[in-house]
Image (tube, rainbow, N blue to C red; front, side, top):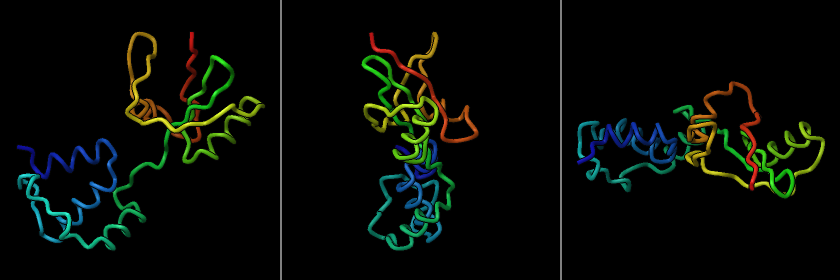
Length: 141
């Protein structure tokens, strides 16, 4: 059995902002408590407009920074942390003085090899304080 508390904490840890805001709203409205079984969450009880406002206002303070893969040449890709695809492309062009061949968003939980370890982009993002930022390169063999 997973509790509402565990589900709420996981939704924050993995930045599932919609789920986290819905749970927070249901907690505030007294529809569930943190010690309840998560199976008892009934999302249809929520005021969807209020939750949408909470998400828009980002009251839980989720980061809007994503990671993008921009193709540098046939074998190399730059990974850039940015708020949007447009911001990532602009940063790439300013940094490398060229246009990328393409740009694709990657999931923050995607694991990349760095030295002798594997690290998720979500953890790499914590190493930066200013964005956009270069996360690193990948070279295909």
